[in-house]
Structures are given as C-alpha cells and as structure tokens.
Length: 162
Image (tube, rainbow, N blue to C red):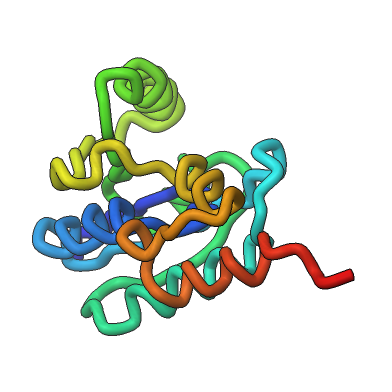
C-alpha cells in the first residue's frame, strides 16, 4: 500500500490544503494528514482543535485519515510506514524553504521521498496566516475555508461583549 504523509500546522485548514489532499488521494492508496504540534508558530487553535477541523473536512474522502504528531517528521513518517511526504507549493518563495527541508529529510532517511504539489491556481495566494488576518479584521473568509472552519475562526476571533 502506497502511503503519503501530508504534514502541516493547518492553523486553520484552508481550501488550498483540501485541494492538495483531494489530489493526493488520486496518487496514493492512503493519505495521512498529519497535524504538527507547531508551538513555535503560536497557533490560534490547539493541535486537537486543528485535527478535529481537518477530520470534519475530509470525512467523506476515502482512504484519508487524520493524525497528529510532534518531533521529527521523518521519524513520524517511518513510524507510519509511509513512502513519501507531500508538500504544497504556492509560489517560488515557498520552494527554497521546502527544498531545504526535503534535502534534510533525505539526508535523515533516503528511503522517504518528498513530492511537491501545487494547488489549483485559484488557491496559490492562500495561506492560513492570511486567512487568520482577514478573519481577525472582520473580513469574509467563506471562499477560503470550509464552513465549520469559518465558524471556528469567528468564534475564536470575535471579542467577548463587555
């Protein structure tokens, strides 16, 4: 069984992430969306909340499972008996960083391949950081995230009444 890991902080999950997940299902027998702890990024949502949002979004996709991990990605990939890691590339600016990670992962375990996948052109501008900023400023993010993610953002970012 060909298994790929799609790691990320998914804080929050966007339609660009979903696009990569859906297309990965056409290439692999099993896709594991691995939500990373990512404390250094100071996430808006806990790892458990992020994993739950991803589960709700991919629940109808066959052969997709959601998990979470902390520590070295390459060790997680080995524990899950996966053959590859899939990474999304939105722009050339993403490539340099992702290329360095891929080379380091190859150095740590040359058996694991890294596959780069570009999202549909309609999602190339999309990032979790931008979505959070739009939501924080009261903008409509419904075109960028699933409805339950939009709701979670609104609940988290709306100030409580005084």
